[in-house]
Image (tube, helix red, strand yellow):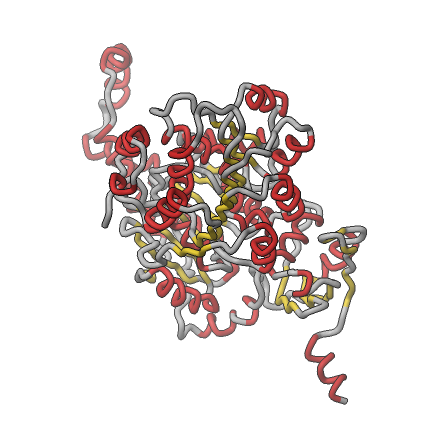
Length: 555
């Protein structure tokens, strides 16, 4: 294992890295830093969140910046405002001993005039989101004619979020003679086409996929029927009284619904998703960082760039479709040499996903039982006792009240006083969980087998008898539609107060067939009228079951 001092970086940069306590580069840093320092070749690097990507491109770029020039020499694009701010913050930390290096972050949701003033003062490095960056280029306030390093961080995410045209316009405005560095967890078709168009015989490197899951993170899963998922979540939270973590949901609608239900049930939570305004998102994240919020309910995209080092838990309310996304999620806990736990709540048909995740992470997932009411009451009781033992008594403040307190309680014996004291907290959980059922699912349970039918598809099913309608949309694999993108399209255009449950999705070349609960089918079709997807008018229509169609063709 080499050290940073073997990478031939400037002493000022090495000192800043030493201050952070980093001595050995991560695999992606060890491969990318020498490439950027020693060559002018374009680079495609496969790397996930949490592998040290910012330092991988940031340190070698900072090492070569011409501090005497006021021109923008490096443009770094990323998908979200939060990640933009995090990258610029990290770069400023690495550059704190370098004189005359100016780094500016540009992003939407805030005053463009303020960002223009910062650019006018001169900046060698600009970190931006695609929309705001292109806006500034069109206004001729961000001049990219002298770019030497073009960096696309989380390029696949930018494409999946619909920034393809913006990226093409930005890349087309930069000079041909530059080094383009692309960091991407996956290589979707759009990414391949973009590389062929704007990159010159790029070299490809991959960070080792081994040990991507930190040794500080333990992994566990709980298996329940889909209808019991929320109750399972509550019990998991209750059995961990001091939990401080993120609960990940698949969609914005699920995120808000879970956050609302938890808040109504008295938990200290809030939601973070794309439907919030930037001011709302900033407010939620600041409260979470200050631990004014105990549990943050979030989508994956909204949580990008959220830098919190002392999370105790990450809870997967829904497992992601992509294995790497699970790695990203779990990597948010167990940081800064602290222990963390990554938990997944699954139903029986998702058990196979756990097997693949174990192979992907190289970690064993512990199958835990959903705690029973007695277990939760015991945990909460002793948590209260621990708090009493640790509480600091302000004698000067409370002394004047003690005689009255002693007088009021003197008729109670020591044992009675303790019983009443602990019952203040204990009775609440006892009353709630007194007659609670065992909601664990076991492989041989008859009820589990009966429940498989109601758990088909990508969403939860609350009732086995729930009926679905079959719809088709005039988009398919040739339009680069995926189940994930279809769900995003539906969530984007259906009113937020309407909960649409989606069943099985079948993506074909020209069409995609999917099931939807009958009560929402008409609303969904109406909501998708006049919608455009990548310049194509969308049409959603009712259709017959796919198997029936096949039988008709055979006849």
